Image (cartoon, rainbow, N blue to C red; front, side, top):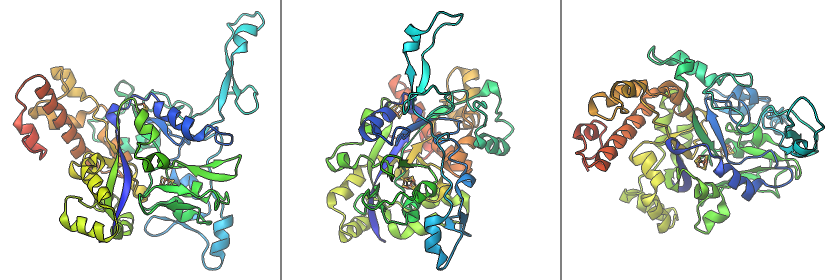
Length: 443
Ligand code: SF4
Ligand code: SF4
């Protein structure tokens, strides 16, 4: 066992209202600078949708001078002595400006200074960089809340895959549209491909807390990290010619403060905390052959801070006692490992992301129509998971490489908790069948 500590985050997607406060406060703190106008370290995506940058999940687009090895990880096509040259000159496929967006403002003078005409004057968008009039095609959340309707050309490709895998019960028709918000930051992965792809050694993962950072003095601006990150969470600063990314607000973390996005989140949905993991298990988890086993494999790297053997190993590895204690009290550890109600985003990318998500427990469509409640009694609670407004198959595409079983298990626990708390709040006796069916303790 080789224990290490990591700062991780869990976001509860049922609570996100898509207000973008997190994005704006992060921008004010970190990217409100020349060369970074188009950058949102934190962005909030409407799902289904294409994300930011547009279609970042279409991994085929980014391969360029790379190919997959037999375990599915990215490697450079060239080998031997050419390898080093290839690292520099391989053709990195980078997102283009149109995949991010060109920042704009509005020409408000049009409202007052426009000459008389047949139309009402409007505030026209102009480029924030050179003030020229522009047509807005895409931005950090241009996907609208039309639940995957093909706005702006492309349909979310995961809708199509989920549709193929879904049972007959689940229909993807307009009257059954669904949407939810997915806030995203850098995942501060345990197996960060941005670090692996950096030829200058600038991209690094801190040993003490696992935060992934770019050393600005060492960065040579080759942008292999932008290509190498499957979540597309490294950005290129056009003014300095260097890569930049989410720092998990490390100066604040070092001062005992939460990240800006966590502190300002209106929905209070971001849980920050310490987790302990076994570094010896990371490679095996990343190389798990069976995609359906990836979630369990990634879950298997976490260590239980209550376990005396783990605490001893942590002390021997030089992890301070207060960090081990913080892991024991960490809501992140509890939500991921103890209660198993949080899931990793795209585990099939094999970078072992450290921002996990509690999937949204959307309204239960059939149960609502029959009883007026959202399936809170034991008789229909578990059957109702099949008729959730957001199809299990879609959530499985996002969080478990297509395996619906772990998503179902999460949602059953969340539904049981909702039912239990509703009964308590109404002064009623909670239904013991619900708690025992999902393995919750009676209390
Ligand atoms: Fe690196 Fe991307 Fe993982 Fe962040 S999300 S640590 S940038 S690979
Ligand atoms: Fe969602 Fe919180 Fe961000 Fe608002 S501030 S969009 S609720 S994550």
